[in-house]
Length: 320
Image 1 (cartoon, helix red, strand yellow):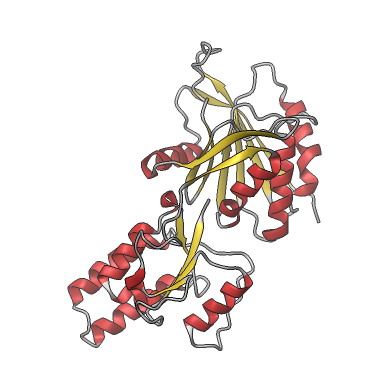
Image 2 (spheres, rainbow, N blue to C red):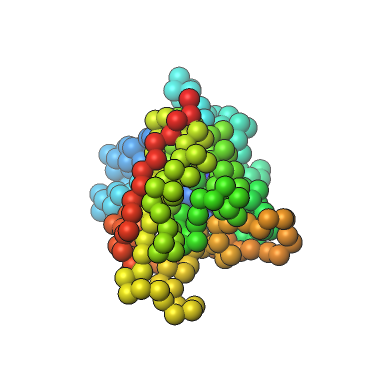
């Protein structure tokens, strides 16, 4: 769902490059910039801007404009687990191409490549536009109704996110639940790539009024605690409709999402899967940025309209 690009910090020295690339590298558009060098992309970019201003290759007004834009970009950078960076090697491009061989980026963009003679998927900033297949990324995708397909679709987003909310009012913890195979697959997949750096996961659901908290917590713990690292927790929030059972088709907690600190994905059928694999398609769609910001705020503040928190359960992992 999220396509990660390696963008040379030296693009920060050109307003047209920096503006176009960063305005189009948003998770709501299916694109993100890798934080390379790890944790230092914005610092390297600012250093490059200061150097150009000092050398009078860039005016101070344009320099300040670029720095203001950097403030908005900083929070959108993503880390990839397992990234290796040789700080003894001075070249950004050499390190990035080495990382690209370990795990390919959607594309690498650097002024060090020769303009007009890009070796796909490596491009000069002047080459980048919607005509480039690697740049023209989709912000939605079809999937089949199987747990493998759903887990595989959302895993790339979870891997690069720091916080993730699963919003599905029907989520339950029965051992033979249609949700169980999906969520066990997700936890298992996360353990293979992010065991020591687990995202902060919250599951939001709105079960029937007669649900028993003790049963819910005990069942969830039995199903998942031994899959969650001992240093991590997962929070489950049980919501309830404020004015009693809603009319048919009017449930205020109807839509299903996977919402992270990067973007929100709307899930067509839901985060469960059928008993048997089916060719009936599902659709995952990254939601518009304004809708995402509203949903993300609601998740973090626990403030959804027409519903209130009934129970909040925190499960600590026991996997070693």
